[in-house]
Length: 173
Image (cartoon, rainbow, N blue to C red; front, side, top):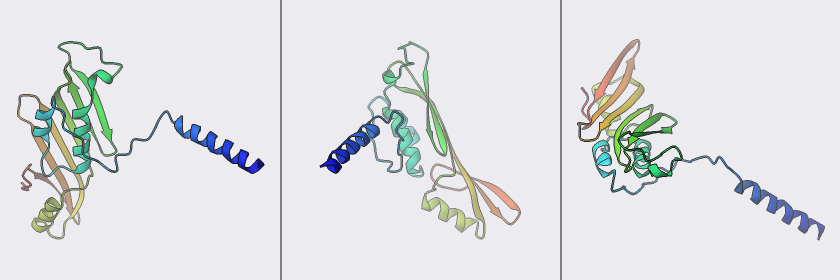
């Protein structure tokens, strides 16, 4: 009987301990798809394409679905954008929202992510015996203006190094 009581008390204390975790880890390993918010549909339509890695798409979906009014620092100010930074291990998304929660501008910078197979195969086809050293992906988005996407890959063969630019369609320039 004594063991049962001690076991129940221990399990109860452990369950309270897990429930009190005030700083939970946000696990982005699943990168589940989020629904598209109506107010930021144009943003997602502009920035997302077939070359984009899953973790980047996930962060863009998080930014587009984020509720500005849920932030304690947001005071409903008119005319002045409210800026928020969303971070992943290998990159950041800096988004500015208007008073209605629409994304006004976004700057995205990511590095060393898993490239789509088609891009990796094209690099290896055009640059045989070269090794991919690092990569970068950046986007500049401004509402009602042209979105600029830049995809760069550093390749190396012996002591030679070369930066390759890849356009949104996957062509190496």
